[in-house]
Image 1: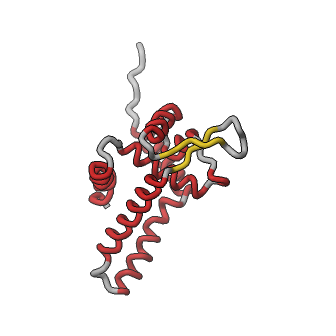
Image 2: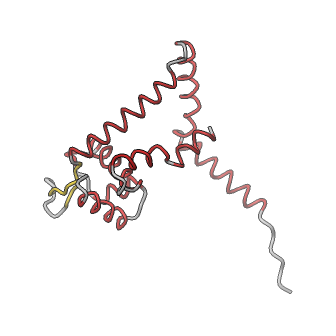
Image 3: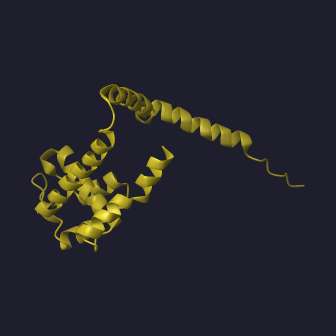
Length: 166
């Protein structure tokens, strides 16, 4: 798991993609394109604002605004007026961005599938069941809260006491 986590954190694959597609783009641009794509499919009437992108990426709205403006300037997104509220501006992916998202997703699936081609059917069934069972902890919010409380309790119990003033 550590090797997988480190590989994902380093973002080597994303960096290689950008170097070949458009070296002027940063990882934050790719993240925004992918977030915009994912949010657009989850949002009614495709109403994706800069605020929605900021929330999805977990960043400050002003940073999301700068990234979004960069994407528009570089031809990866365009602004449209909201159909629900004329005061609001929304973002949509250009055809170039949609091709990029599709290519990245297809390539990731191809890599994943390629790594499993040597496995027999029983190994795949076992892996799927074990992976689902393993990933269950990440989906259990109550268990995550209990675990966070346990960490806090351990920290509180091991906090050194401060010397008293005389």
